[in-house]
Amino acid sequence: MYPYYGDFRYRFEPQPMTSFFNGRQQVIQGQATWTEGGQVTQCNIPWSDNQYMTVAVSPRAGFQCGQTLKVRNPQNTREVLVKVVDTVPNNPPNRINLHKRAFEALGVNPDVGIINVEITPSPELEEEKFGKYLLELVQVGYPGYRVTNYDFEGSEEMSSNRTRETYVYTLESPRETIKIRGSVVYNPNTNRVISFDLSEMDQ
Image 1 (cartoon, one colour):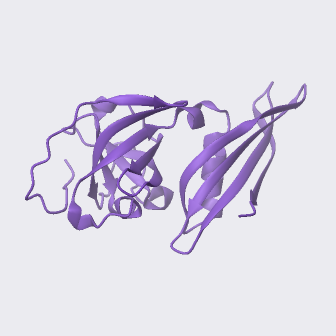
Image 2 (cartoon, one colour; image 1 turned 90 degrees about the horizontal axis):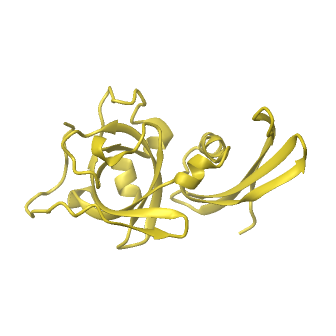
């Protein structure tokens, strides 16, 4: 087990694994603690990956290594996208262990120790062919920013061997919030990328 940090003078009972559908997204009512991580993870993905926007999950939760989760703090509506890098064997399915930086990105002082959160698996990002691919490019291209949201704008068949998919990503830094439109053109017959483009949108 990884250590949990914070003041635990209060007892928190595990919440039931409840969920509801909001459009295409399944939202899980859960709780989040935090950790500074360790050198070795079950996924062989370092905690420093994804600008430290990383998380450990219960093996019973059904999440996969490398999967992207959206975590929302309902108290202040702050959101962050985190990557699954590790597991916590004794956690209930709806409790996650965020890296400290991701916990702080939700607008919470680490001294709180544990908070209620809404966890959204990102099936539409995983299912659309190149949403995850573009997300990783955005994260590399904008160091110091964290991706807090995304929207799939649509797919366009340009010809028999060219299809374009377009996404909009919301990025936050301590100074500003920006939106990036990312598109990728690929050959649907081979799934090979022909070109991609990232551009900042006017605010």
